[in-house]
Length: 245
Figure 1 (spheres, rainbow, N blue to C red):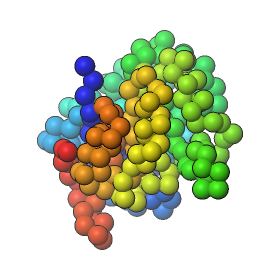
Figure 2: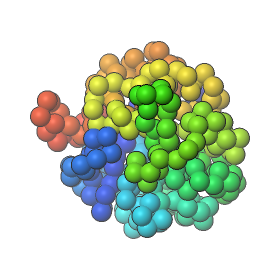
Figure 3: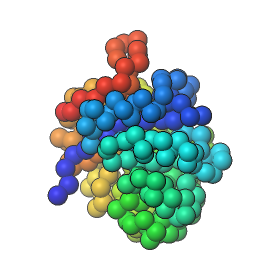
């Protein structure tokens, strides 16, 4: 039976832990291995690692991923630079429960089917970075760490990746990422009523109440967050922490 999940989402760049705001201005916040050790002690539901630069090389940093897996005592999901089923299989073999696809899968949805066949549908995740066009009200899909917009309809794309065999969809709001002002609950409701596989929403969580609101108003979803788990106070001092709603 599915239950709500509270998921710290860590961003990695050049081997270091960083935090961005609307996908810009990455701020170094520490060593990812140390963060994993802290989250081990907090007994988190799941930990997501996203390498925001791996798309440039079209390959994950397998050395870093192995170090994280060795240290971790919690379920892990990794995303960044995965372009083949072979890479996904290697990540699972290292010790990750889930592999997140993004740019490569959006450009060729058949990759989702290939990865699902290789590692199991329950482990094949698709992460979509989205931004709302304020003039049209349409949600646009971006790739390459928010640098390139693609002409996809978000809802039709979600249908396509589900049909291809994805086991979970992660929606990351570019507009709200790092702002700590709450999730886009309207979008979450619209997608949740349409999609019949597990979903996780990221972008906007600033406190526990934001997570409570998401789960109460939308349903059994994953509540992903970055800033609220690495920053404290109005001056955004770095402090790794974890709290449940």
